[in-house]
Length: 214
Image (cartoon, rainbow, N blue to C red; front, side, top):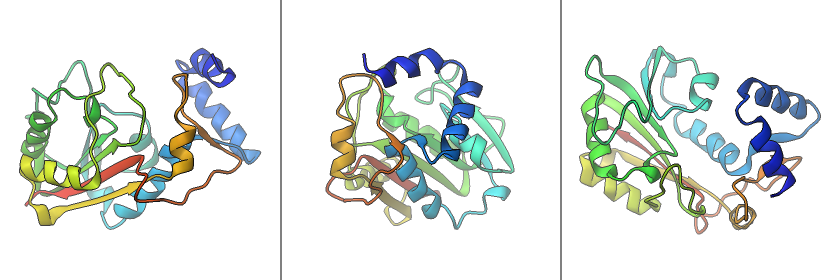
């Protein structure tokens, strides 16, 4: 077990402590965010910049901390597994302007069924933001089933019911980051003092799509 893996296992259940450590480290110029996620989130923020996020009712599927902690939405709901299974369930009390699936779809047994359910929960002109890994090692949480390229994700979403002209894809990755995350433990490489943030379309680590429902 690496030192990084040992430390992460010891503190991962204490989210407040983890956040405090990250803030302190950043003051000294050391970024403890995951390299691949930090770079891809910077890209995604530019892609969704045209949305008036403060006016949107938002649902995140299997919600993490990033979206609820870093953005001020009109409202923010969560649909978390195992209480709710997006492959089977929908929220019936309301519809949403934006639904987010951040590194979730690769873990689903039935992503087609899940995406059809997303469509049912979106308002007209609502958006679905889906972020998935590509050149990332298998990580069973609790299972790991799928990978898509930009083209693959575009046509998958089209098959699920989104109009092809309303599907915008992007990706981030480079060979250095791909190699760095081919580790023998369960951790991912962090930014640290400096990491290469350039992207290479031939080495996508994160693939995303922003889809609009007509």
